[in-house]
Amino acid sequence: MAAGDYLGHRRVINSEWRGIGRHATNQLRHSTHIDLIDPVWGRDDRLWPALTNAI
Image (cartoon, rainbow, N blue to C red; front, side, top):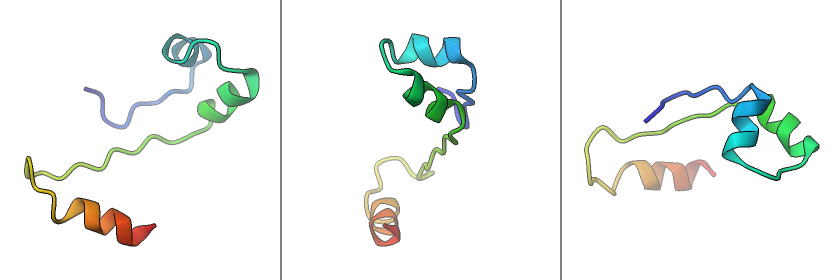
């Protein structure tokens, strides 16, 4: 598992998502990857409702 992974290199992007176009590759190169993890395994009553309210 990787947390906070940086996808900025074209070869990494192209190996993960084969066949995507140049525009999508450029968008991924400048994107930010965020992991949101509830520290309590199996708990479904805090993180998901908070995310639902945020959007």
